[in-house]
Amino acid sequence: MLRRNRRLRTNESIRSLVRETLISPNDFILPLFVVEGKNVKEEIASMPGYFRFSLDLLKKEVKECWKLGLRSVLIFVKVDDKLKDNSGTEAINPNGLMQKAIKLVKDTTPEMIVMTDVALDPYSSFGHDGIVNDGKILNDDTTAVLAEMSLSHAKAGADFVAPSDMMDGRIFEIRSLLEDEGFHDTGIISYSAKYASAFYGPFRDALDSAPGFGDKKTYQMDPANREEAIRETLMDIEEGADIVMVKPGLCYLDIVRDIKNTVNVPIAVYQVSGEYAMIKAASEKGWLDHDAVMMEQLIAIKRAGANMIASYFAKDAVKLIS
Ligand code: PBG
Image (cartoon, rainbow, N blue to C red; front, side, top):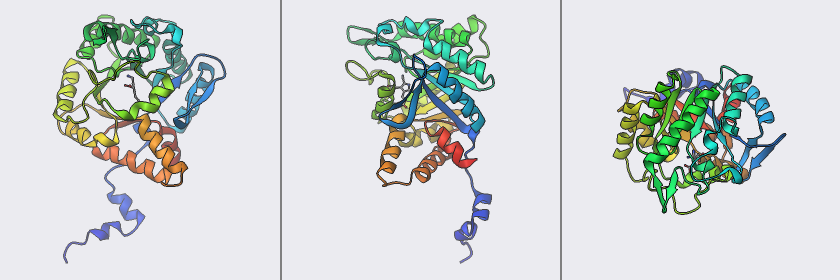
């Protein structure tokens, strides 16, 4: 035998010398859920250990995250039912919860990169990502509102807007308006290949944003499709996306690698709420080793080609590796 692969696995020192994939705190984007009120820190039932924060407690939370080494957050808001309608009115309110949250994070930790979810579902009386007419989700009317929404986030201080709606042409609409209004440095991290996944369930509990009728299959992608993900991603890049995203994570790592081999912009992967819930539930039962499974999945996501990972495990992982 001339070749023995086990030689490079003999001990941890040699294994770490030849390790191909590393995870560091800079790799993470931490999703944050924000609610109205004071002194609120509510655990999300289907996401054990994950919370919604009111603005006052959000301040403490982001300070702690910064200290842990996290450098990027992605903000989502839970909107009161009475503010929901079919046109996203509240989404562009300069004093809305999102806009206040952006300002608060930038005031508290100015160097923290603030990314914001751009989609109508938390604001929609129908729980859909766009404006509804006669049971259909209108594309072009929606992208106009998404552009206004992005502008309002940029004005509040967002570094990146993250359109998660999957309407056609929204990156072009958003980029054009940001340019026209002088927000040249506000970036777009686009959910380019976002699948119509059953793994978003816990997230919809967190924001009370489940669709009121039907599903999201006329705008989010069919899990059976691979080439379409490349087409979507290339179009978003042409339209001006700075970073592209694949979502969910684990079931879609083949897509991540395809895209990695095709494009030359940074790639983000969103390890979604259902992926978090599965690991939490199995480890609560004592069936899986929480930390080991968490790290294995995060490493797998990076190995597939992700440059960054949006993950509810960001804090847990960073504590473990630093
Ligand atoms: C909203 C949005 C969703 C997620 C991120 N942005 C839900 C959806 O599309 O229904 C899911 C995130 C997760 O499950 O962690 N457009």
